[in-house]
Length: 95
View 1: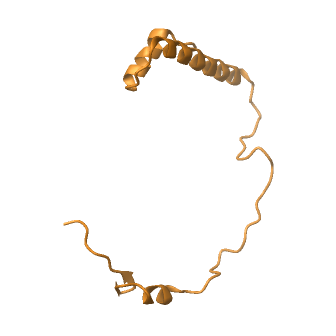
View 2: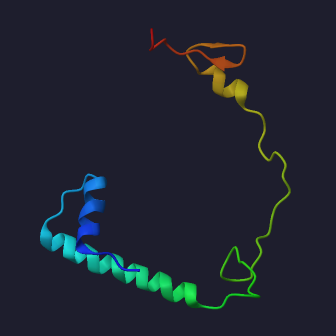
């Protein structure tokens, strides 16, 4: 698949991008290069290849999911200007 100059200009118009004639030609070449690369990748036979989440077969050590810090809510709220029912009270900004 390749784009014509008119198609590039139409895409630019739809995207509300103003491009000059020379910019459109440059963009046409770049987009056509991308499409050629996509066609090359689609031509590769990938049957039997398992999808990968990462390029290397590594696993991450996971720690136990538990609380490691104490509850400091009271200490944080003690210095707050106003609190009520464990919530911070702030000035109303929307009427």
